Length: 89
Image (cartoon, rainbow, N blue to C red):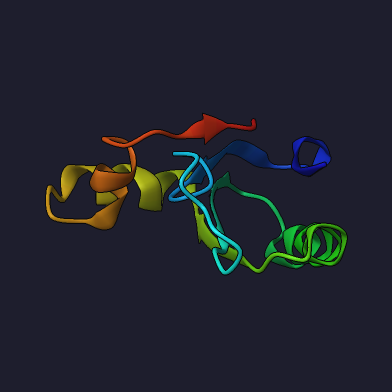
């Protein structure tokens, strides 16, 4: 579903869902990188939340923001890529 969003260059699931450690109260963490419309992504996420019954926690970054945050060794982005992730786009 998210693959059809114009300008979305990369999308990753991470956290408990990606590592297969989620329980009934777990949310789904999504990292979205691109020049996409955040509003368009929110519409897709709202449908996914309704369909799955799960809350989504979305982090939206432009490619420039993503590259800058990767250089900051203490930023959570670096910890995301050291764990199990699922690439969607």
